[in-house]
Image 1 (cartoon, rainbow, N blue to C red):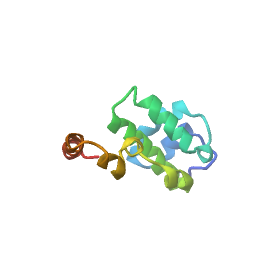
Image 2 (cartoon, rainbow, N blue to C red; image 1 turned 135 degrees about the vertical axis):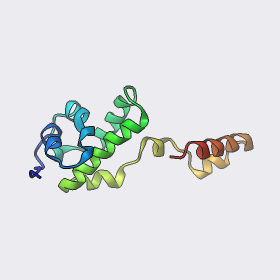
Image 3 (spheres, rainbow, N blue to C red; image 1 turned 30 degrees about the vertical axis):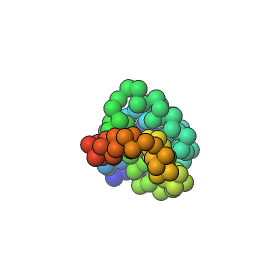
Image 4 (cartoon, rainbow, N blue to C red; image 1 turned 60 degrees about the horizontal axis):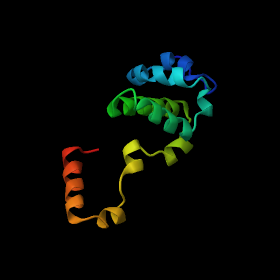
Length: 118
């Protein structure tokens, strides 16, 4: 495996990364022409927002997770990981909010969570 440097862009690093998830990095390279060590959580937020209009949620998650894994392999992204929330985690109701809903609404949420686990 060729050494991936922190100052490489995603387009430069992706083909060198010896991980099968590298196929999910093409769009990242097109979207952000910045060195790997300049990525931060706002890039993920912008990417998720733009990408969800183009691909399915699982496809977008695969792309985000591939980018997170590459940065981790290069020794970057620790501060992003500590603050990162998935799209579902960002919109999920907290217990107090759920408890404030009607019994019918709570039952429907429970049904959806069982039918479509995260």
